[in-house]
Length: 122
Length: 367
Image 1 (spheres, rainbow over the protein chains, first blue to last red):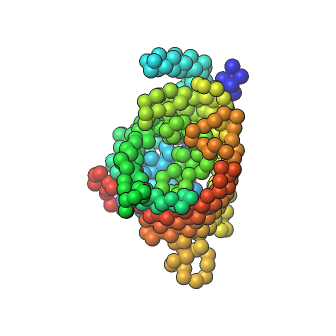
Image 2 (cartoon, rainbow over the protein chains, first blue to last red):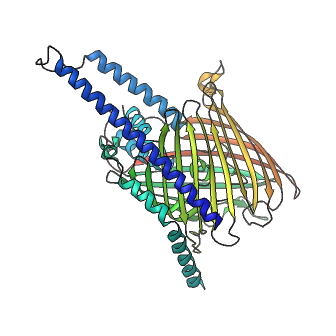
Image 3 (cartoon, rainbow over the protein chains, first blue to last red):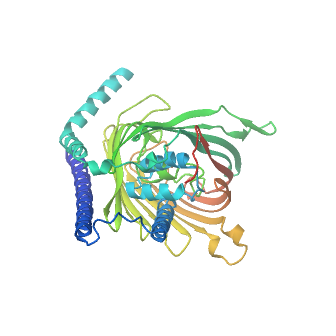
């Protein structure tokens, strides 16, 4: 009886953790949408609001790509290297299956999975 | 007799599930309320996953107490992604032992042992929850689930405490809920909660138990610590506990892994540091492929006997050398000495392991 209660408590604790993480995620999403709305408002109130949207400067895109690649590499080393030697890069569709397998087996997070997949398929 | 056992087992399962109904309902409710933002396009959608045949092959040579033993084995793993959220995975092992028969020259092989280690269907419900049903590797500690394949493990011998908490054939038959998520900017949490039903059909036998494992991973420190719990719902109905640790210091090419497990049938621990020689200033191409490994372990017998655990208190020290020829191809050697009241023995292992990946469809090209 006592053991069943221990098990129930463990499950409840996990549920609470999941709930808190989901709340954090929701809060983050709300914040980012709020920031987006604020940015849109700022754009609308700017004097050149009627000018067409300018494409991101090429340098900025390259910098973003580079940052994403570095972050992907860091997460790849941190997550994959925990259990095994870091493999060479695989073709994108092979990597997509492998990362789904690792998502289940090694329980890597959704965010880490995205960065690693991006890094490994570039 | 068998039918009665299965019936009793099923009745027990239903009773346990009924007891857990409020918690399961709560978890299902949480799953249902996951915001739609979490259903954003999976990155795999950009590169659609294809079925894979992967796994490992190895040729291991062991000398235990002076007796040679050649051990070829192949472990194919099939990964079959279904749609954006499902994955079917199954792993089998085909192995044999080549031994010297007294009075005959050369090595002679016994029958090839074939075993489906696991066959499971995974449903990735959302970023926090993955549901698994079928036959799955029991997530008690880390070795059985994450470090077992010959191409992954640093030393080819199994830890003495490996049989604790993983069931009679290393796997469970039932259902599992698991996941990993960022709980805080500084750390991730991973968890697994499972239930296994009794199965007496060899070689896919399993015990009836319920348990869980939870771990905290701190990416900045590259440290993972966690614990496992299991309650056996048959025989002595005892509790089992375990702890695990993986640490990779950021400044050194060093991996430290360790586990502790405790049960009525025995307890013990192992700790395994592995150091890559990549920081040495000479022969850098060779040194970055070379890894030194050591493992120290102790096992203490419990009040109840076990067929798969050592019959007496045992200590074992091993050290080894691995050389990574290519990505996936590894040569490994290790020497160990086992100390127990049943007699001390040397343990030597030499082996070659290979990890293969065969795509079963068009692979696409790099972006």
